[in-house]
Image 1 (cartoon, one colour):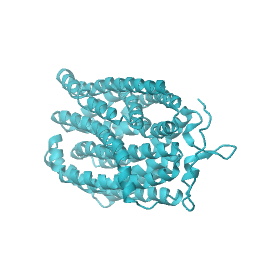
Image 2 (image 1 turned 60 degrees about the vertical axis):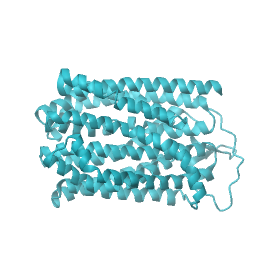
Image 3 (image 1 turned 90 degrees about the vertical axis):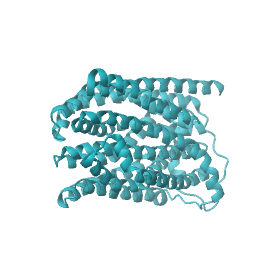
Length: 474
């Protein structure tokens, strides 16, 4: 739906402080008045543009892990495939932390843009990167020193444990680099420049794909070579992200300790719940990995494949929170609650259609995937079962991602936290236990999907009620 432009800002720009932030974050109407980009035009059009560009970026991020798995699978070592099942769980956790910081960066910057306070938005871009860098260093250090214990708890043993630990000891120290890159990409999207954010992730994927065969096969480094390639790709992403903000958009501001301290409160209010929200999924997946371990390397290897297929196929769904967030944030800043509601409706429509196409694609591609990844016997059967029967249930979780974006921007980030942890615990553990008892691995995989889908519908219902109440008050 189309709406009239918001009132022009009365705040004057200070001399010498003008940057291309103005031009990237806002457009101009015929009278020359400036406005935030997402306050006008079709919300569905904005969702499609933001989601698809963000999805390509996420595909690039997740493809790094998938490319690693593809090349390492050519070594035809079941222990390596199983090790990647355990490392995938922890890497998913580190990426989820980065997504949490990105959500906070996007929400705070987008709201300032919606208010047309571009000087504040400029400052928030820099401060969000500082917060992200400091916090991710602490988290990364704690994870690094805990690697042997965490891998043992997940069920990794002997040679598989050593392979997993060696791989992660190379990659985990680059977690802050990845987190800052993701936060920078989120800031670019909040400024209304999704294409520049896209270049960051695509560039990283190309670097990784180019280095993988060289380090794995030519230098015979195996899993360590894959880890080095991924770490190098992350460094490349950081350079491209800073170039986009500091050079292309000319984001410049002096670091003011008082302002840095002041901005920490609203940033943390979103970031902490968002991080807790996002790590719920890898925690739930970690339990699934733990439950699969007694069934042997074939079961864990199949889960490693599934855990890499899903992010690539459902990148459009995974990107909904980050893509819809700036649209909701700007309209909240502009007090356009009707457009917030419309954005949610359109996001659900987009998610449903996307899932149907993804299901058809995976159902057709399942045998080919197994052949490419050198999967045979039970491992191949588990992967094909998942693709044939469980994909629609997983896709419903997209409704939860949409709700998360609304909760984060409505100042109810704690709703996202407890609902996602509900999915990771009550929506996973009992369903997995019951499914495993009656149907083995097939029941285990199905149980996780059923519990997750139920929680997703609950999240969407609560979100709808919350926005409706807000709209009635306005």
